[in-house]
Length: 243
Image (tube, rainbow, N blue to C red):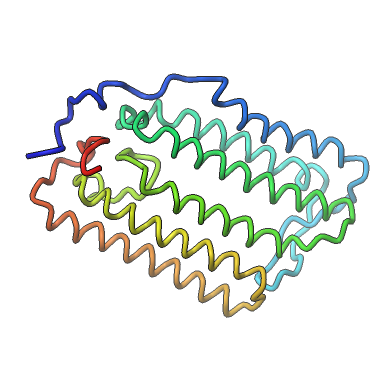
């Protein structure tokens, strides 16, 4: 068999070494969110909109703590989780082969949270910004960006499209992530369209499309695995197989 040796040079490199220099831009995003909250605190209303329905109408309020500190708190939790997950991943050696893609994914998620937080702050201080216009554009951009980096992901247990078959076939992993990347970019366009099509039917249709897309990828990963003559035990797919 070719491309499935589990003890090659790439797999022996181990996970990328921790680097504060690499983490500083991500921490700067989180710090900026807390600083923005501190600056806005004296000017914010006591009741801050925290939730919008499918029609873009506010249907949930919270106090200053929830409105100004919830998203920064989530951001720091997300940073910690995504920074240390590779250390617990049984496939942690593979992260060295897609470190840049994984870093860009983390940056994208934090930038999305920062964008939404900026919108919440703007509403809290009475700017009149339309956050329902901002949110779909932000999540659309995030999905589109994830779709671009997804084909670069290599087998692991936390990041990417992990089915029993992508973790047991380099061919299935590669093909599924290439297709998944295209579908994510399509999803990004559809999410962005929500900013302009404000109708409950569109939200329902979008959820339906996403469900069908996930189901299709699940089935597709199985079909590619089924036709792969070089299948391996689950989790044994190496990072540089089927480049």
